[in-house]
Image (cartoon, rainbow over all chains, first blue to last red; front, side, top):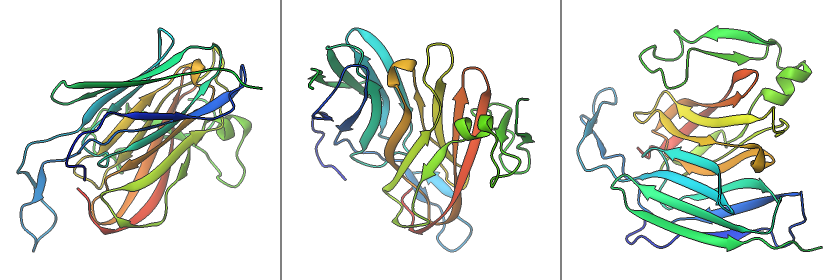
Length: 117
Length: 139
């Protein structure tokens, strides 16, 4: 579990060709607490909301100025998640990824997409 | 309904949870998929046994075209055995090129079934599931 929140980091495929699909990986060191605790270890699992909930609520993906994807999350996502998804290289433009947590805090990272080959 | 079998999920999924919509479609015969079923059925990559439920890697994909007028709108990951049922929902557009998502989810201990729901803009929601045993719960 991350003790500190670090800015998100983006990695993309090295060779991106026009109109081909490429992978985008984004790592965000952010804690995720469900806030749940077992009410009673001896019986059927029953959970109580014992602690504050902390999680990444939204991930927004912009390609150029266009919002192309959105990931709506819950506290059921692991700590420090690594998300991988794909985009079609339609233009040379930055990919910007914005994260918003359940407290409304916002982080973003971007990576310039340039065609090679 | 198009193609596969429409399943009322009353027996499997709590009716109070309406986040998934009313019905999903699943193939009639997993061994002999029709072309419609093949392109809509989500593929799930998840180990059958997860040692640490705090971080279970999952890869979801759909072999579906991502054309302007026919594409996968969303991929949702759920586990009804967990206190946090809905893990996340990924909304896609044709710019994604392929319907693909890899991430890590929390799973509670014991046996469960992870469901992935893919929604096509023309042919509705399609469900696939994978059974998983979690050694140490992570919720």
